Amino acid sequence: MSSSAIPARRAESAWLKRFEPVSAPRIRLVCLPHAGGTAGAYHAWTRDLPADVELVAVQYPGRQERLGEPCVTEMDTLADHVTRALLPLTGRPLALFGHSMGACVAYEAALRLITRHQIRPRMLFVSGHASPLRRDDGGHLLHLRDDEGLLAGLRALGGVQEEVYADPALRELVIPSLRADMRLIENYRRTRAHRLDIPVTAYAGDADPEVSAAGIGEWRDLTTAPFTARTFPGGHFYLHDRRAELVADIAARLTPVRAR
Image (cartoon, rainbow, N blue to C red; front, side, top):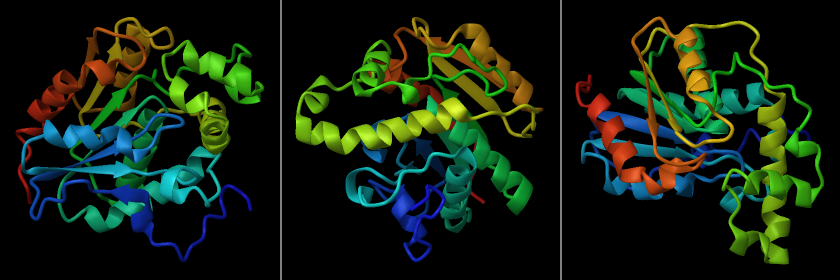
């Protein structure tokens, strides 16, 4: 089955997890995981968000309860599915957050909501990824490496859970989705700026070997609204150790948003 042939009969809600549903949220914060990541990466965020902000985490196919579904290896396909899944939630204001690969997926989903459905998210938060207009074609594509090479590249970013990859059975389950996600983001190209008319905030770890301050600063070229860049102490996965600070910063920026 091709990566674009995700069964149409499966409910789009399979794409979304609401760990702590809020009956009448002021705003929903949609969170998109990094390559190889799962919706569960954002479960702990519910403890740090205001009670009237509902967290909605995206679950990509090919992992956990969606293990039997084909992984998606093309950005357009993934962004289209995420956008459709979000449409039933647009009766309340939305904001999108994405880390690493998820930053680009969040941008593409926001663009589709605006241009195809005339639905304007209130804010876009991007983390751990340079502007998609900046491309590094240095020939070190991880998705083309063997398993050990793939893991070595991710280990350098601090993104390898050794206890998972040391278990042959678990490793066999997670490597395919990790490789598919890396193929997706490493082949992703945006050659022309489509500017959003919503505020964008870009975050990164100050010791991230993959993302410089200049790289996140270039997200300003993808919005006509106010732009902010902020760094936190840490590497590519700074948000694990700095979760409370990061979520507090996001919550403060969401505070002025009122429910329709």
